[in-house]
Length: 97
Image: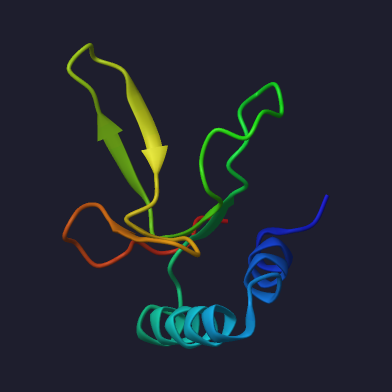
């Protein structure tokens, strides 16, 4: 299985030229502003391998708390080829080794 950075690079490279250039520039900017942020890649597939959403590149980390008491680890800033997603307002957290 490819590591996260390989998955991110492959996803960006798979985009049409104009979109790829925009995504490369934005990815480089985010990583240069927050060089130690945790990176993640979601391929958009559920546990059964069905496509349920667009792939996303995630930056930073946060724990989301739901009303039913459950929690979920998620990224703070996300990017996909068709959207930019921002959740939370804090500086992206650092990588966790």
